[in-house]
Length: 267
Image 1 (cartoon, helix red, strand yellow):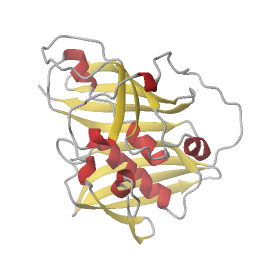
Image 2 (cartoon, helix red, strand yellow):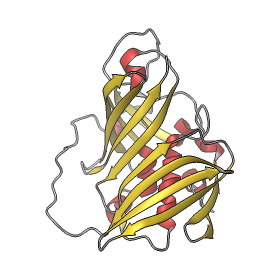
Image 3 (cartoon, helix red, strand yellow):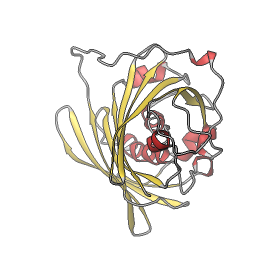
């Protein structure tokens, strides 16, 4: 068993081809149930472990149908169609007889082609020049070294309106090397944009999250446990739902992933 809390949290035991058992990990709990990013990583891990997988992840979409309860779960990953260079996946996480998470993924055997980064890294202070932030002391927030640049989580909840842009450096607190699973979790480390927009605490929950991967396995491995720069901003708040987009760059400026999620909020 790995010494890294992240590896322990995404550990899956085979129950047969494409079927895996796992369990939530206390180090990755949120206010209710596990941190959504670790659940998303578990779903991708089921694909990564599948013996019939073609290539590496291009995209992953997670739908949080219900809250994941603490304890055991089963994940089923099935390649719905395999083409010459792409593969399309359907994934489910069940607890008992109930489906609580559904997902789709695309993996591919990428080819060398024209490539261009159309989203350059913003000019910001280096991670080493910033102090570690002190986010709310939830188990999952303690698993990351976050260094805020702008768009901090409010310390005063006064209902004042503000900008939803957040920029921060973040890395695994144990400096575990980055891979596709951990990059997936990093994509969900931004606090809900509604808290920055109105500085009012309301119940929230992500209902759908998509991650697009823009680096290959070798590029991720070369990063080791270094910081990545995350940037997130909301697009619209409308009748109980908002969406937010985010980007993750390496310290060298390589765009590693982009992500988009829809979030429910209640008033």
